[in-house]
Length: 91
Image 1: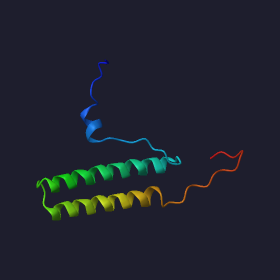
Image 2: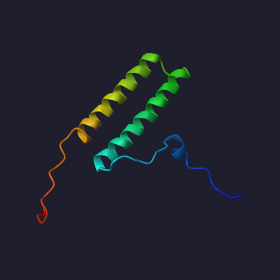
Image 3: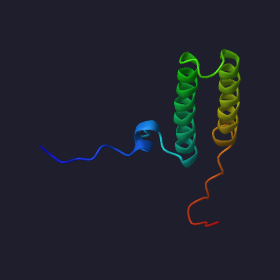
Image 4: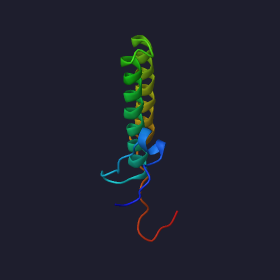
């Protein structure tokens, strides 16, 4: 039997999954933002279900989180990538 410590509290509360898509720095950053969005929506839903916040408050928070995610997508994925330099030319 191995003597392994449980993962830190942050790893439990904020799990991160490995990114499996086609890699670009922008896609990786958006994926991290998407995972954070999903985690926060889950927390808000649990707070509302547990009676800790009102349904309208939960709705408004999820709406704000969605707007933040849309802004992230616009800034990271909806922009034209810079053109690649021809071989032999350095920027």
